[in-house]
Amino acid sequence: MDLASIGAIDGGGCARLALTDEDAAGRDLVVGWMHELGLTVTTDVIGNVIGTWDVGKGSPVMTGSHIDTVRTGGKYDGNLGVLAGLEIIETLQESSFVPTRPISVGIFTNEEGSRFAPDMLGSLVYVGGLAIEEALDIVGIDGARVGDELERIGYNGATPCPGFAPHAFVELHIEQGPVLEKTNVIIGAVTGVQGISWQEVTIIGQSNHAGTTPMSMRKDPSYVAAKIAVFLRDLADRYGGHQVCTVGKVDIFPNLINVIPAKAVMTLDVRNTDEGILKKAEKEITDFISSLSQSESVEISTRYLARFEPVVFHPQVIDIVEKVSVSHAPSVVRMPSGAGHDAQMFARVCPSAMVFVPSVEGISHNPAEFTAPEDLVMGTNILLQVLIELSQIEVFDS
Ligand code: GLV
Ligand code: MN
Ligand code: MN
Image 1 (cartoon, rainbow, N blue to C red):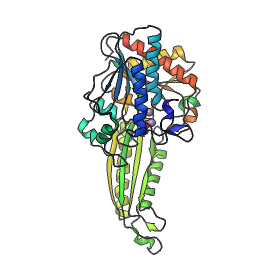
Image 2: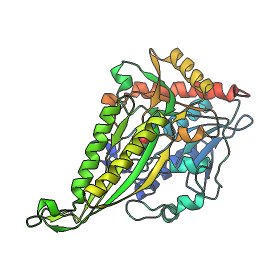
Image 3: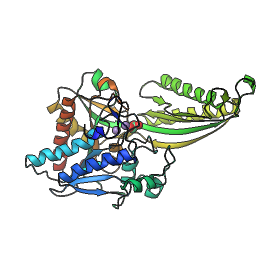
Image 4: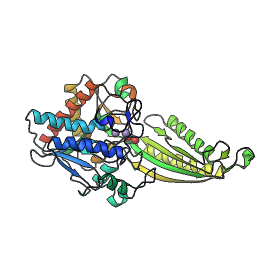
């Protein structure tokens, strides 16, 4: 709740877009808590903060998540995963329990991707999926550059990326969807994360008078943007299954009632658990856009903002999450994640998985996001036990 008071917005939510003053203030608060626990705290070149409890031997088991939010975010998305990690270390310290390996808690930069695309930027750079030079040069929706903003808020650290590969990585997160609540299940043992395709589409038409220009003579970007939005919705309905499509952002220029726009810029968020189906959806969208550009006499260009294939988590780690969850919770289900998460990046470098707790009414990326305190506690207890068990494993099954 203290963290949620930073960047608080109406309705009980948070606005801490990545690398803003609010993100910086949130980071300062949580880093202070890391120091109070006696953790060794490092900040790397993309601003990821890793707090490590230096006990035991060997490479650390790692947990964590993000504390940046979308502009209309809730209190729990990401924040739970970071604070649960600190709570676990505090609990173990208070009970004088010494784990077999060090435990690290990460705060990863710009997981949300709302200000700077791609999402999961910090963990992507951490695992070597994007060169730091490229990451620092990313320009956000407000024209700011990642490198400049990191420096401005004082989180341009010196620790190099890629970072060390942890022994294992497990992230606790709210589900952000309705599955657990609808089925009366308390814990999700997450099997993987669906593939994400983000594109920005720019449509250039001919700005003109809304009253005098005959319909047959128009080159209208807002009409074309609407057609694309409807096509995506229909595509998702046709495909069914895990296919989801969203047009979350449309900017029309000059955005006036009596002017046919000159330009529209829109975003497409297309996701599926199956890479083949995701590719098919992308091809259909590309073909539709090119046919529209012909039929409506507009210029359309597209660029990728993010593209991540579906990720399958490590079977042994999923088994441990499921086994521990069954011993704590009345009901547990294996499920894929619909949202992107830092754990999907760590899956590239170490055995990884996730624990989900329910989101009331499946609402997230919304100030009304809520998870019952007892579910937060249960998820955190499960994460504690999972980290202990993982730290005792010497070598994972390949
Ligand atoms: C990240 O929160 C996403 O959009 O899945
Ligand atoms: Mn999140
Ligand atoms: Mn989110």
